[in-house]
Image (cartoon, rainbow over all chains, first blue to last red; front, side):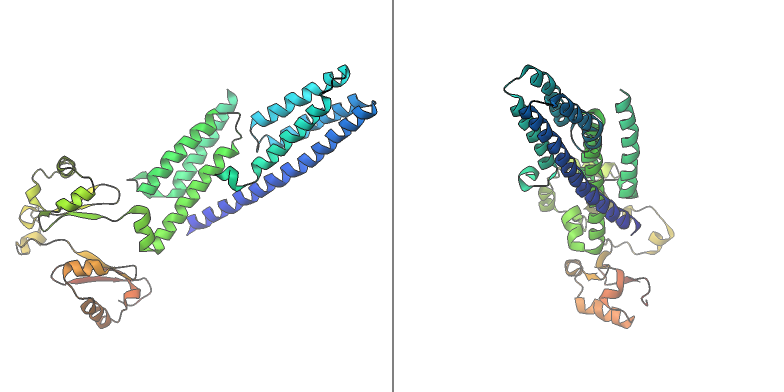
Length: 124
Length: 226
């Protein structure tokens, strides 16, 4: 009986941790989207892009990647980190693909969120 | 390097906890479900230990889930004979009354060599000395020697030299096993009558065994009258 209670407790903890992970990813993604939008707006306005990219980098390294590394594979975070590292030189050179890279960053974050949702297509 | 080292230490304690949670049965002979879980745990633990790009939680969660499922399955097996048989299978009688059940051996895909080898591990080198043998759910063979081949003890010295199969379980944890009673040639009514004489019902019996002579041994459930 003791083992059964321990097992039920473990399953309950796993479910709580799983739901908490989804909520954390969703929350961090919302904040990341906000930072990306701020970068795009600054780029279109033509002022303060460097500061906004700096904020995005600090948020990603200091909060996003640090909090999600216990949930998400390093591969996904590595892809996002590579995109963010390209933004500053692209904005300085006035590259046409700047907004496309920002969209790619959003898409990578969305993929992380989707990978946490227990959808049938991912289970199968 | 240090990450793998620390992961290794963490997973070592996790797997020990997991095996302890599964219980002492795990350390002896493995039932089919336990064997599957042991193989899966060892594989998952290795992957989580080696691949540092994958979060440790992706190794911990499946290990704990499998162990918890094993505990649930054990609990369900304890409560239901049907689930026990689905998960662990049934013991199969391969020799009864000194006669080898060849059909059963074929069904089990047991060759004569397998049978002889299993008997030899029990110190039996002549199959004709075996009165009764069962293939347990773990795959091990349990054998009973014929009365004239048993070691001499006060009990065997006093008993008549007539070969008989060992007693069979006719009531297990309140469940009446009709097939066992039929095999022994005992009517269900006779057993129920004997229980009634002892002020018991089938549901109140923890274990009831019967031999071919109809002799019953009854253990009441704890708290019930015997």
